[in-house]
Length: 268
Ligand code: PLP
Image 1: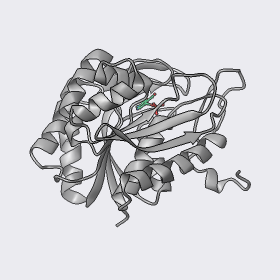
Image 2: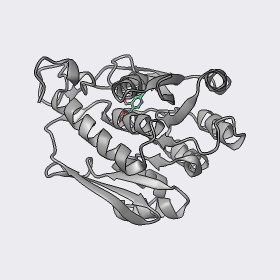
Image 3: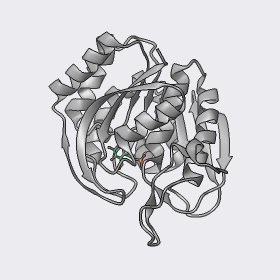
């Protein structure tokens, strides 16, 4: 069995983000994705129009069925949609239904890149506190790290989360500045354990955060340590963005990462 990651994420019918991003990113790493669906969203590649969360009892049944069936080597969560869904996943950890020590990448999704609502951001940010101690790594964007920590300075925010018991925080500065390189810092125990700088690509991307977090989860499932997994995922995500699809010709169109760039006859 390929190393299997159980993802908790929402359906994005445009195929850019959410569970499709997870399946493709994990498949591209050589893993197998199992998905417990948390919500069905109504969205295009450009904007979110609404969503219907999955009942937490149904979410629990999806997860326990797969946990009984497949050798789950890592967990990844993205859009969870409701406080009840967050509580359900926390219970799976608390009751050891998800085995202690299983690597867990938590992408604390609060709002879409386009700005669309994927739940009540304030309430969700508070509810995430119950899940954070189980995470091997969290991958917040700049809005999310501020909402989770209550700190405005990004580095203070990462350190504050470490001090609150989050093992590792991948701080991504991509939303804060419009120009210049994108810097990433991995914080462990309040210290920078790894830094990477990637050149900024032109444009906004729909589903890049989901793809990165899932690829990291797949690499952890295969036995990489956190830094190895991040280095591999950074290299991979960069190619998906270079080769991203542009659904509309207009300026400002959100691009969809091409997670199958290796199938292009020529790729950079
Ligand atoms: N999950 C779902 C279902 C979404 O629809 C979105 C964004 O639209 C996200 C997660 C977050 O996407 P991104 O990777 O662009 O932050």
